[in-house]
Image (cartoon, rainbow, N blue to C red):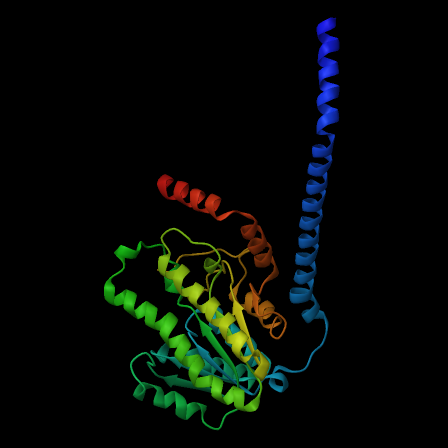
Length: 322
């Protein structure tokens, strides 16, 4: 009995001496919980402001806000092709820039016939030299270019170790996804600055948020596009140019995609390219960096909550088990 009384007495003394520490810890816990609640509320408000309000509130036509023509680089990719179609649906004429014009010629003819807009296909390998840029410069001359859409090469999404990529192929990938997109922006921006309006949309991938196993070139290239967009926004937003970094996650495979491409079935978190483009284009002028599709924004929010060391550990476990 004496031992019990002694324990209770000791407990009361310890509680009395530590009560100030308990109150401090409780206050810290309450402040942390409140800060997380505020962040969650802010994220929910951003989700509504970026993805839902623009689709409910009518706004000016895209041609009035930005211009009559769009330049699309990488239109052989399903996402860029769907984005171009959505622009054409809004009455915007399209200039397709491709190394292989046959890959986009059918798309150009289809958009011209379906939406009664002008389309041009420019065959130019702008990664070579300034002479190769001349056909593109000639096509841009005298046109009210309101949009530039750059899209990352989807072939980067195939898992492959860096040392397994042939050197020439790696050089081509870097040229197409880094050098050419930067040069395309350089060619189109002067006209936009002169007219004090325009939009540059760089479509990369959610891979820029976290490193992915077997996708070194994809992570690096998309990270470059994202940072390029942020730097351009800092430099040109005050001149009437809207710069947007689109970082979609998985998008369903198009029926026209070659069978060698990794197949992705359609679902709520894996939309069709047309569905994604419809959502993404509604965020123009609203958000400079967005996934473009609200379920992807939920995925992005969840990814941000995972510490990078846990992400890396999970990736290593995944690699070792495969």
